[in-house]
Amino acid sequence: MDDKKLIEEAICAKENAYVPYSRFRVGAALLAKSGRIYRGCNIENAAFTPTNCAERTAFFKAVSEGEKEFLAIVVNGDADDYLFPCGVCRQVMAEFCNQEEFRIITAKSTEDYRVFTLKELLPGAFNAEELAKGQRD
Ligand code: THU
Image (cartoon, rainbow, N blue to C red):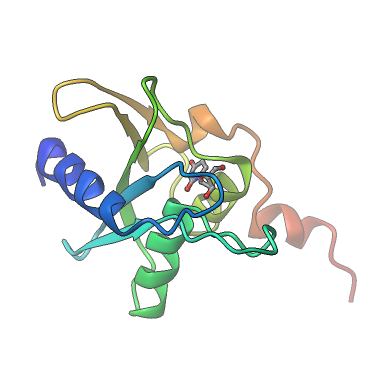
């Protein structure tokens, strides 16, 4: 899968952002190992806390469709600068993605983007392995 195609998908996903409070649209496109792409947008709420980021929308759509393995995600927001996933979204990525392999692409456009691994953006992630270390019978 071409990175530029995935970036185009994230830019399209932004169109459906529901952002009456922040007016800050974000789009994401998540590439599963199956080859399928899942789009996501941010969905806000008058109570604020239930707001869902674009990245998590994409992940929850994909996982609810049976996907559990992923290769990359593109994030594109209404900002002049690169937009990085929030800490909560990084933690959701850590649940399903390989730290060294999963690529996070923050894109201003199809021509201007930066690529990171999950490990670079969430070193020392808390995961199932860490949880098991603390479990008692
Ligand atoms: N937001 C995302 O969707 N993804 C990010 O990576 C950062 C923030 C959303 C949440 C909220 O709707 C708006 O951007 C402002 O925080």
